[in-house]
Image 1 (cartoon, rainbow, N blue to C red):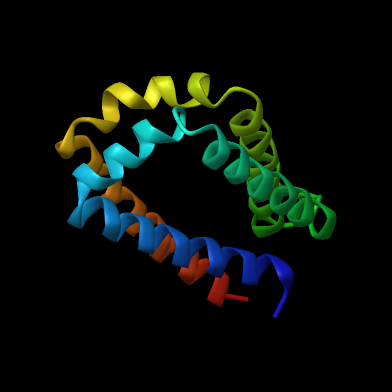
Image 2 (cartoon, rainbow, N blue to C red; image 1 turned 90 degrees about the horizontal axis):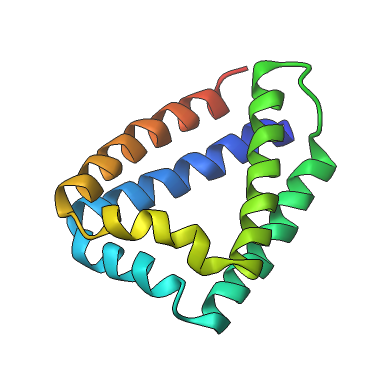
Length: 128
């Protein structure tokens, strides 16, 4: 299996899990998003995990030869940048989401979108 397919499948599984969590327990997820900027150790550790993961994805796939490879390249870059931002400025990153994350209806809608996206990514990862 090509690396980009495996990455799409892993991302799809993640989106499905996150979507289910947002749909079933939006209050918990909203509290988690709000707390991320307030917990220096957790936010730094989150960034310290995301940044190397993004760099690893970019080391493996860093071109736009196919749509899949292009998507995975952009995904790796976003992971890397998000990891850096969470380490450097977690409050700035989550402040925009804080107002939205307190609304259960918005979180549930995000969960539904995440489920659809997860299914699409799983399908793409299993196609040639």
